[in-house]
Length: 218
Length: 218
DNA sequence: AAGCCCTTGTGATCGTGTTCACATTCACAT
DNA sequence: ATGTGAATGTGAACACGATCACAAGGGCTT
Image (cartoon, rainbow over all chains, first blue to last red):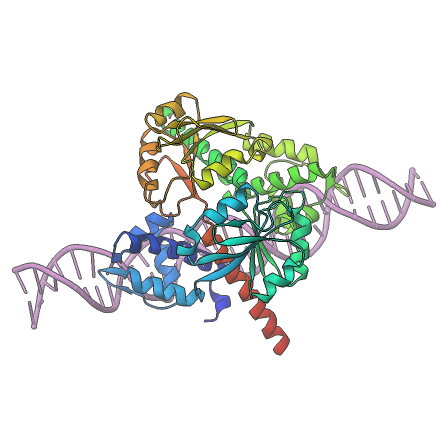
């Protein structure tokens, strides 16, 4: 059983479980069943159990899973050693909101560097971080050992910045510009695209209503 | 061939194609091949062609797809009639950034109503919207024909607000609170969880580096 | 108008992940 | 101790979606 034998979707779901378990801890829950965890994560209970079974036996039959232990196990599997430093490029509306969003730190991330090319923003301190000029940012990011950049620049400049970061050997980008398009191999990129998510949601919601109506009518 | 025979993942990808095509239009591209579109959306070319084949023949052999026509077809399939009005609940850092994020309108969405329970925020106009008190918001939202709410309240109050909105018969929620947990049937919910996305990205990025190293070593 | 090149569209095949169903095992009460 | 109820862990069966490979067909050049 190597890492390659484990469904990639199982790995992805581990992050969802991780998140759900932190919430359960916060509300003081000590034990959780696969059924309950499945509800929270919107998957089936069998999926939950099978996912964990790839890595060991974490539960107690007849009882469920100890929330804290399970969380520790997942943290170990994912090798998730918080706190992790990240950099922010682009201090517009979105970037500023992220800098002020103190909750990241609770969740194991810290924006350690912030960059903008607008001279009026450079030098300003937002939250606990001082905005720097984008010149030489690749080097600053790498020398601090940061692997991940949050990209919150205008859509038009995003592809250029992303490519230059890729050249510097950065590992991953979380972008708020939906139009980034193709990236070279070796760098992972995820786009947060709220409009697209809203469109998906609306589609599924309307489909569900329509199906419900049909069931009523005949 | 009914809607039920079409893979749900095909439907989800249509939104990704939609987004990519709008970008291509903006940069003036008139024709796109399945190969190029696949690159942009990070899927395989065969997947792209098969996805479209469920709905008709949209391309020209030897040439590719006309970007504008394809976009129109997808819009028709998804029944995506912009502009769509949505409501915002919670005008903190995130909510304010969203209100100022004028790009939504370009993308077919408009925040038509905004609510906060903090009396100091009520009455203020941000962007083109005046913040209202949360009292009676369910009714105001429904009477305007809005199906989707963006939930940007503190994590602790999110579950309560979500449940009360569900009771009002709302169709969908896009939440920024990761801890929402289970919802009754009949309402769709999606959580935007940046920390989780970052954790996923880092995992995959590091895995990729490790695999690359192994390949070099032996 | 004929031939070539290019890309689509698609049935057949393959692989992967999910579901099913139940044996297993634990906690607890009596 | 022993029985009961409850939830886990898991092999086998199943279903679904992705890939493959190629025939079909449009455009362009000569």
